Structures are given as structure tokens and as C-alpha cells.
Image 1 (cartoon, rainbow, N blue to C red):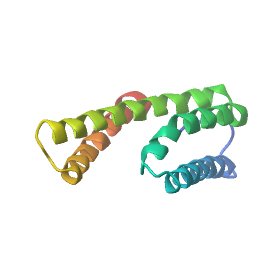
Image 2 (tube, helix red, strand yellow):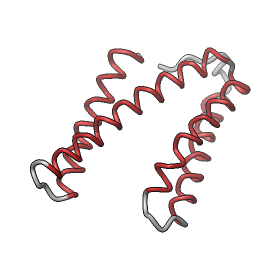
Image 3 (cartoon, rainbow, N blue to C red):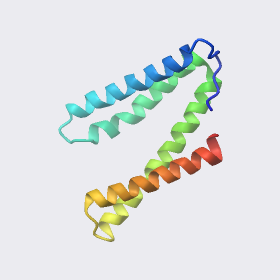
Image 4 (cartoon, rainbow, N blue to C red):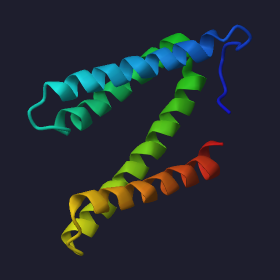
Length: 122
């Protein structure tokens, strides 16, 4: 369960968190639509969007909540790095096609991210 610095009695904290996530998603999708390299723009924008989101979170919710979000982002980045390494290994070493390799690596990514959540973030 997330810890917040503000009360949840009226639900405004959850709405503002959801709004930030929708804004972040819209920004990434917008950038991905106009990028000719496919997903290169989407993944290239992610660090900038993450830092901007952390800065807004510090202003809106305080340093304590932002540190929890930063820790979650770090765990997600480590899990994504593992996904990329596994997918590359499956395609380059074992000559898998892109779809089976990415789907298999995605399942492993979900397991790694869930393990991080159980061990570090819960």
C-alpha cells in the first residue's frame, strides 16, 4: 500500500496520482506517434519524464513520498534492464524470433518486478 503525506479521506490524492500517470502516458504516446524510429522516442523520453514527474511529486506531495516513488522507479528500471538483456540473449544467442523472445522476456520481467515489489517496496 502506498504511503502518502496527505489524507485520503476525500480521494484527492489517488485522483492526482492517476492524473499524473495519465499525463505521463499521453506524453509518451504523443512522442511515440511522431517518431519515425518506432519505440525509440518512447524509451528515449522516459528518463526525462521520470525526472519531471519526481520534481512535480516533490512539490505536490513532499520529499518522503517522492523518495518512495524514486525507489519504485529504480526497481522498475532494473527489471526493464533484465528484460532487455534476456530478450537480446534469446534472439542473438538462441536465434529466437522477436515475438516469442519478447513475450517470454516480458513474463520474466513481470516476475522480476513482482519480486522487487515483495522484497523491497511492500
